[in-house]
Amino acid sequence: NAGVTQTPKFQVLKTGQSMTLQCAQDMNHEYMSWYRQDPGMGLRLIHYSVGAGITDQGEVPNGYNVSRSTTEDFPLRLLSAAPSQTSVYFCASSSTGVPNEKLFFGSGTQLSVL
Amino acid sequence: GDSVTQMEGPVTLSEEAFLTINCTYTATGYPSLFWYVQYPGEGLQLLLKATKADDKGSNKGFEATYRKETTSFHLEKGSVQVSDSAVYFCALKVGDNKLIFGAGTRLAVHP
Image: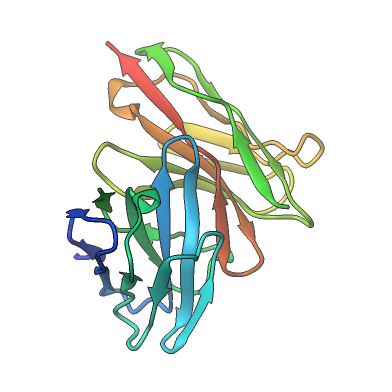
């Protein structure tokens, strides 16, 4: 019962460094998404994907790249980290878009950019 | 644009007290509405949902009714427990592929 797995759980970066946050799900879900959670602002959608080979931007895509080469994996790339990207990042998936289906969330990655 | 507004927290209650967390929304059309809960150190979990006006979602003693006339989806529970301490998020579905979340309301329940 792995569900949605995110790695790493914690990461500290220096400004300008790059890194990839990993997200994998074993439920054969077509839809996957990345959110960032900031105090007082709730969750904001960064990017999402409705299937392998298809990605689209959410509310706050700048500074982040994604790709979806397989159904299982949806990595989030920070090409040049900035302090404004300090946040908690959540990956979420669902079986078919989000019409009436629920999102399954990973346990989050806490990222600090110094 | 579409948005969700929740009451600011934290909400602090004694065990067995009545809980209300207010949520109002702005949206075009008739969105589906959700409440998610986040326990410490975990990701969000769906608590309940409602897909059309006057629907009542319920789960684990929590309830929320979709009120189109007041654009609201307030979360209620008659008797809270310490284990209900968490952050609660109201959300609405936009189009086919996006959920918009409110800022979250932290609930602390004391024995």
